[in-house]
Length: 144
Image 1 (cartoon, rainbow, N blue to C red):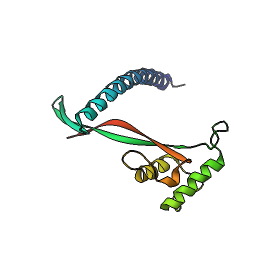
Image 2 (image 1 turned 180 degrees about the vertical axis):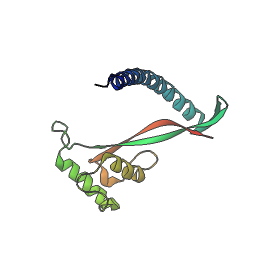
Image 3 (image 1 turned 60 degrees about the horizontal axis):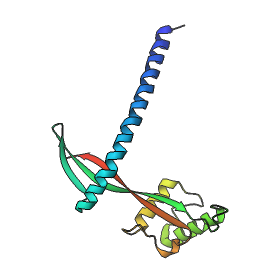
Image 4 (image 1 turned 135 degrees about the vertical axis):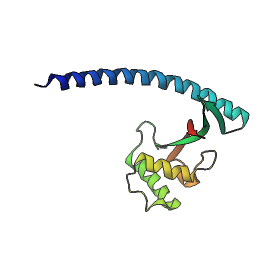
C-alpha cells in the first residue's frame, strides 16, 4: 500500500476544500462590487473604464447575458411541451428553424434570442406569449 500517494491525495483534497471555501468568499465580494460598479457606470452613461491595478492596465466593461425562459400558457400547469412547441414554431418563423430541433440547448437558445432581441431585450412579436428573455448585466475584465 502506497501511503505516500494517500497522504498526497489527502493533502490535495484538504487544499481543494480550503480553496473552494475561499472562492465562495471571493465570489460574494465580487458580486457586491459588480452590482455597485455596474450602477456607477450606468449612472455615468459609460459601458467601460480603464484602470491600473498593481502596475497593469485593465478594462472593466459591462456586457449582458441573456437568459431565455419559456412562457406557460397556464401558470398553474407550468411550462408544457405544447408551450415549448409554440416557441419552436416562433423560432422557425424567425428563420432559425434549421438551427434548432424540438429540443434546444439553453446556451444555443440564449445565443439565438440575443441576436433577435432589440436593445431593450424585446423579442419580435412571433415570440409573444411563448418566450421571454431577461438581460442581466455582468461586469467583465480584460487586459489593456
